[in-house]
Amino acid sequence: MWKVYKANHYIQEILVSKHKSESKALESARKNIDFLHIIREETKKEIVIWLENKDRMPVGIIVKDKGM
Picture 1 (spheres, rainbow, N blue to C red):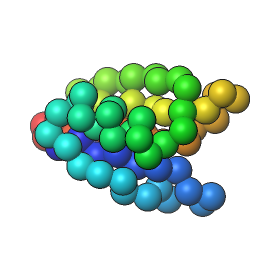
Picture 2: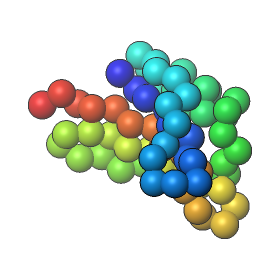
Picture 3: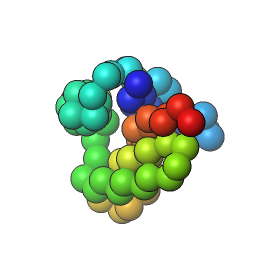
Picture 4: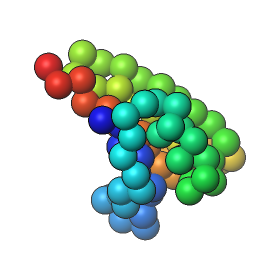
């Protein structure tokens, strides 16, 4: 399950939506979060897509747990 989070003023994030596909998660992020850059990181346990603004500050994140 892909989860889209929007950054808050604090450490915690706000859950925006959940999706079964990466493309739908990115589509939801484009509608709800103002970002310009995407950085994708993949580990054995999860896939993380960082969403950054024009100053390269994180404004959102998309996460998928691989369930290992």
